[in-house]
Image 1 (cartoon, rainbow over the protein chains, first blue to last red):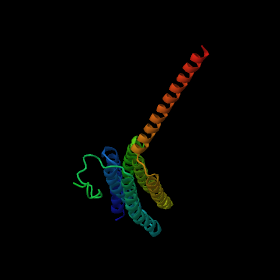
Image 2 (image 1 turned 180 degrees about the horizontal axis):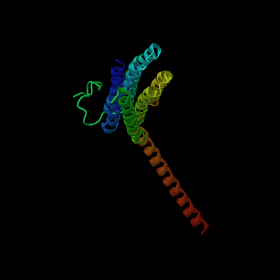
Image 3 (image 1 turned 45 degrees about the vertical axis):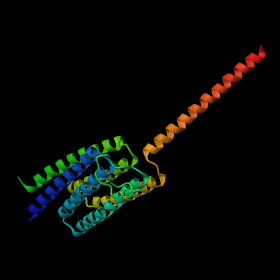
Image 4 (image 1 turned 120 degrees about the vertical axis):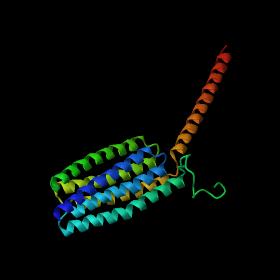
Length: 113
Length: 131
């Protein structure tokens, strides 16, 4: 039983770090701010949360586990809020979408195609 | 192969992968053409640092690291929100700032040229009157 828990936490660690790597590669490869945000705020949050869950199931005592899960919930709650705020602010200021974008739902009605 | 050895390998692999992710994100922060790109990179760096803290917490067995991770998440959230407010209150993109600077430079150049032309004219006038 103990070995299974250790193996699960090892697997979660590797998967979480791979998610973080994929998020950062997306941060470099994608063309504009909004697509980069799509990579960073989903895959990045997923990676950090998976690694915190690995810590939670690796820890034996209840206190550490509950705090790690509270950290996961907190991170899951705050990451969408902050990236939504950043996206909204930069769209309002006038950072444009990349030219290969096919749809802009927030464009004014007369300019929408 | 016992589970602890596999966990050791997993910890090493996770640390190496996180290191790579960290440097790739730093490349975007340095290169990032606009301010929001850099803020996004900062957000990503906080997520990677939380991952680092979780891995180190498993490796060393210190449970205090969980509190550090929660505090770091709070700081990262507040920093991103504050930067987003800053982007909103600045109200200009990098292109706006660049074109403004170009216009200011062109205006300054025009003014300097006009001033030097006026000076030349004055000098010619004074030499002519001196003769």
